Image (tube, rainbow, N blue to C red):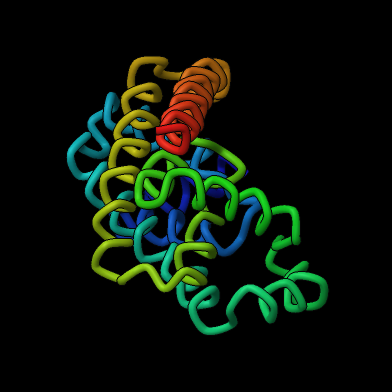
Length: 201
């Protein structure tokens, strides 16, 4: 897959990178963790610029997240679950994905959209509960833009740093993911404690 990804970016440049990250949101087997570190490595070879990778990658990923947002908005939760049990499997969408994304969204609201962009496994699917909850499009785009840009910038930087070992990016990302999850757990516990104290008073 690495050779194919590189050929797309070599042939099409930044539009090719944007296209790949658009597809990442609707074709799960193409992860950004395989795309962006390679683009970061290409910046170290002078084939792309770091800023260009971040901008093109972020735009492609942001636009690619919109189909799932509109899917959630159009279907609503009940119809979305029926869709997941049927045709949704062709898109890699399962009920577990909906449940996991919904829990994150209910706990953290707009912050969930931003922070989930930094966590593999729920990054794309957080758009669904945002759509189901009728989050205003401008607000969804604003929160998503920050999270997506941070994620793309991190991946590109790791790929540039590792050079030809860019395929080892997963090792570094797993540590980063655990840190983010730890922070989210701490914030969730703090929120629960504050809520209980508020009820007592």
